Amino acid sequence: MNNSIKHIFCASLLLILSSQATAFEFNTVQPNESSVSFGYTQMGVPMDGKFNQFSAQILFDPDKLDKAQARIDITLASIDTGVDEANEEVAGKLWFNTKDFPSASFVASGIKALGGNQYEASGKLTIKGRTLDIKTPLTFQATGANGQFDGAFVIKRLDYGIGEGMWRDVSAVADEIKIKFHLAVKASPAKK
Image: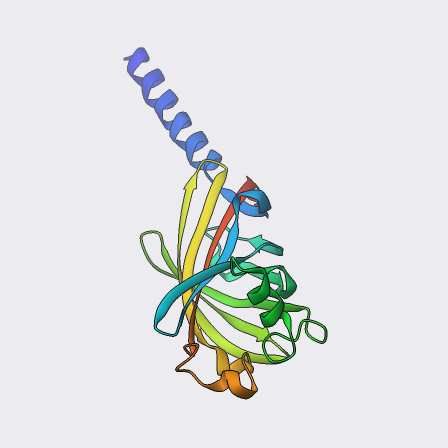
């Protein structure tokens, strides 16, 4: 009987310790393992690209969603469409106007659980001085102290003044732009 009590006590202690060990606050973004990319249609042909420079701050504990925070700042001149001439064109005044508006930002105002590893983040996206509310579905996967967020959402470029003058013609470049993100994060033990 004594051995049975010891086994039950040890098993209970292991359960308590393992549940405490998995309580993490994900708060350090790994930039070299993260990406922000986009897809669009030009003259009916699907195209894609990415931004080579961005920073992100995350504070995420799946058990404390009311305290979650996220901010992503993108250096717009770091756009990479795969063609140097196109990169120069979209950095110009008719597109991103990176001289006057060097960065775009997303600041989360809340996140809610949708079940399983599915979430929805809401917040404000600012591009070229225009700020609009957006919602983006995302997934979160964690293995110990390593995690990753993946998500995508669609914006209408004309809502942000991206592509002015002759570029307002959506038959040349579609209005819908799909933004995709992958953020690799590391965690520290959650604060009590």
